[in-house]
Length: 107
Image (cartoon, rainbow, N blue to C red; front, side, top):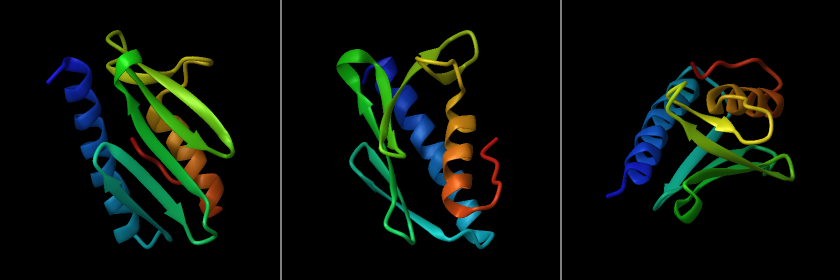
């Protein structure tokens, strides 16, 4: 297993735990994992899909009708958006909050 695969898998496992906690707190959404793809689904049918792109060593997110690419940063020990440098957890918290209509944190 490559370092990219290990990092991605660790990130997804941690994210699954945080999402489960939010659901336990009463947040109205669900998520599923099929292989390496994590899908977060909301009551209105909207989805956030997270997939690994191993050849480019990127994590891709499809959300709000747009694609977002994240690169692993050794400096911050986090995935960062290649366009604006936003951390993965901040991006997902904003995306999920906007779908739920309430502010959530994924720290």
